[in-house]
Image (cartoon, rainbow, N blue to C red):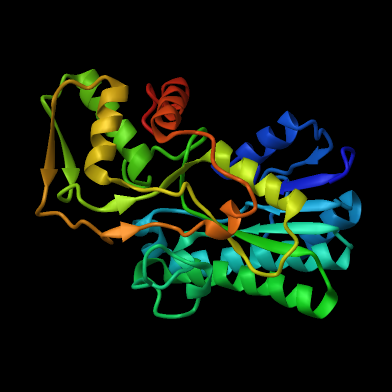
Length: 313
């Protein structure tokens, strides 16, 4: 990317989008275009066309999406499908129409079949049935990948896709019902420490293995791919190793400074036993994450304290 190139980051206020903006600024890219959802409804075809016509960005990061936890995914199935298809259809199609030099589409690890072998390799896409609770979201993301491939095949567009593992970091969602496991545990241990609770209950027996990547490392990988990767095949972006939920809970408890007891409620579901991405394709190019999990959790907790510790959000 040329230093003065116009770079549009769709979804710049989210955890990933804001990290992409930080990474671009760190590297000296200052011609960054952003729009809030109030300023530009990405579901509106005419509005997106007018935006591209006016701004004519050279590079586009598609980090905008309607997202949520299991409950939201399963409750608002039509919205997750319609909204996400509309957003990516408009952004990808008009990137082609207005001659964007390169576009990066951000997917999700939920695109993989529910029972796919571990670790998850790129070639496992469409090899089995999806997890039913988030199937609409996953189908939208799969469609985005296939759109990038199709526009490359038919029009020669340099559109690429990246699939991140579980992310955490600044601007994460710490909502008590709708957040993912790592930010949920940060909030739970913080509130237990503040209230003087003698124990924290963690769902399941603590044995499931999960992989976590710090948001700024993901942003570093995405900008790296934008600069260096030009292939049709999408790329997994992971941390490379996983951790048990039990060890994760103990690590977060120590970082937060909680001194009570951790109780694992094995009457509650564990979920998938293991979920690890195979990031060998990316690692083979020389990229590696920089932020160790413990360091990343400390940074995430500091962000939580700054933005959320005294709020009911």
